[in-house]
Length: 101
Image (cartoon, rainbow, N blue to C red; front, side, top):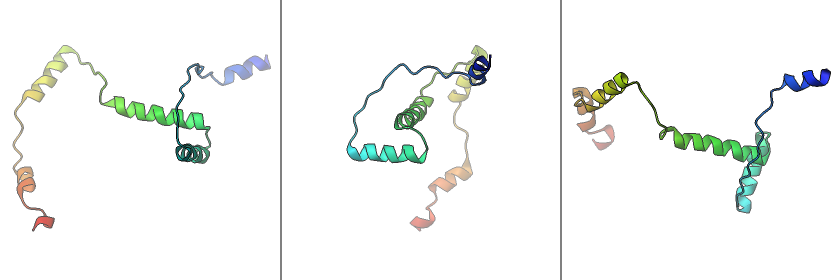
């Protein structure tokens, strides 16, 4: 019974069944090794976490988003509006900067 309690105390992580192989120079391997030591992780875990973080960043702007038809129409309407006039912004952008004077 204690064995069963111990098993249920910590939920299982999904099994890692896939392998990813890569080649690196000695300098790259040493750099990654030092970074994994500093973060108290294995090289595999460090590389996997860094890869996942970067993959999420790359895909963030490319993900699909959905809106109900009424909100989609309002969104498209806003995109189609002519730009609002911003005189102070126009002045700021057309006036020579301090570095150009």
